[in-house]
Amino acid sequence: MANMSITKVPMPEQEPNVRNHNFKEVATGYTAEMAVEEAARCLQCKNRPCTNGCPVNVPIPDFIAKIAQNDFEGAYDVITSENALPAICGRVCPQENQCEGQCVRGRKGEPVGIGRLERFAADYHMANAESKPVRIEKNGKKVAVVGSGPAGITCAGELIKKGYDVTVFEALHQAGGVLSYGIPEFRLPKALVAKEIETIAKLGVDIRTNVVVGRSVTVDELMADGYDAVFIGSGAGLPRFLNIPGENLLGVYSANEFLTRVNLMKAYRFPETPTPVKIGKNVAVVGAGNVAMDAARTAKRLGAENVYIVYRRSEEELPARAEEVHHAKEEGIIFRLLNNPAAILGNEDGWVCGIEVVKQQLGEPDESGRRSPVPIEGSNYRMDVDTVIIAIGQSPNPLIRQTTPGLDTQRWGGIIVEEETMATSKEGVYAGGDTVTGAATVILAMGAGKKAAAAIDAKLSAGE
Ligand code: FAD
Ligand code: SF4
Ligand code: SF4
Image 1 (cartoon, helix red, strand yellow):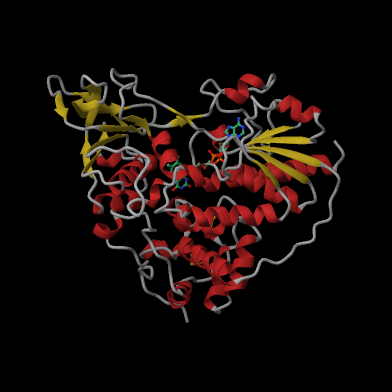
Image 2 (cartoon, rainbow, N blue to C red):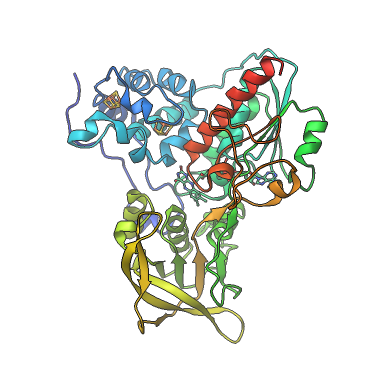
């Protein structure tokens, strides 16, 4: 019988004042009993609105039915028929705008906790199952993938299963893209990312790290080297800056640099081991998207006493997920809304010692549809901070477009593709993920990688 509770089975979480001093996962996951109870909330709708809301079409009612029958491995098999990274998506997908946003149970109460159940099935599999050897018939064709983020890894995983030889070229020393070096440990444990990537590597994908395409080798050289197609999934890793005085002072980070240092230098082992990333007592994070929330919550965990989100619009326009804002507030992050930095102030040693802030009020909507901030004359004041983290967005790194003649891009740098196939203007070259859309989501990047793999396979198996 269906469980008609209007709320989800609650997810156990660490207490805010405990978790803001450690890097362990905030949400600790369902037990088997909780998962079965939550699965019983699903009404098994025939028209599957939830699956229509998932960019990779996970057969949601089918996997939930398996959980309700205590067949957790069966649930995992159903999910992975469409989604190669379920432990990751179950944790970081913005489900409220996707699968759960379409769930009929959400009309009167909370939707089914699809993400929580997906996470449960994936974690159960990792903890209990032996990986099964898979026999794949090779087809003699080879594909190069640039970048090992969710777009590249998904494309590689799909193609290897179809018999292609796939080589992934990754600029950094570690695979995973933003999953490894951006999203913090307390939201996405790095051991888990490594394990999901290992699953794909075990299928035979050759992941070559420390290869910067555009420097070590170009896209044209890869094609000349016998690759039948190239997929570019190089992300949007170039941080934007405010262009105000003082941005070159010591103690100013881009959120990108800050989070990459914390992840790749394993500063998240703090406080067990000292942090190699310097953080002050008073930290201002400029911006209010998900990356800003991650940077602020990370700074707090590294020992900062006061961490401020400085954002030029109001709560209503705040772009971060509601859940992230809620967690940040619980952990003691201070929100200075309708405040915009005009300058970063430095001391005689060249270190940050404050920011000059101008208060704002909301005016007419701009082209994004959000009311635009208008400075209040004479409202300037000084905030005493010793670290500033700038989190106002990223765009694609120009290296690949500068070294790939014939590759058409938007003015802001995004690679232009055909929507149905992800084919670029250059024969045999495909692209997807943040390098096409600008900063977006893991699941959209995965969806693009999957679409490109299908198009590459269709073209190459037709002998074109
Ligand atoms: P990326 O993940 O950026 O991977 C690109 C890879 O290409 C990188 O490994 C890079 O090193 C490599 N590369 C770049 N240039 C080259 C080159 N020339 N040669 C070889 N390799 C190259 N999304 C969510 O859905 N949920 C979240 O909670 C969430 N939180 C986020 C938090 C942070 C801090 C950040 C930064 C992003 C977050 N996102 C989140 C967004 C999400 O991570 C991205 O949309 C997604 O990772 C894009 O995937 P991608 O494969 O296109 O690119
Ligand atoms: Fe929902 Fe993401 Fe899972 Fe799709 S992959 S079902 S959008 S959590
Ligand atoms: Fe279950 Fe909700 Fe999907 Fe209906 S829409 S099948 S209730 S998850």
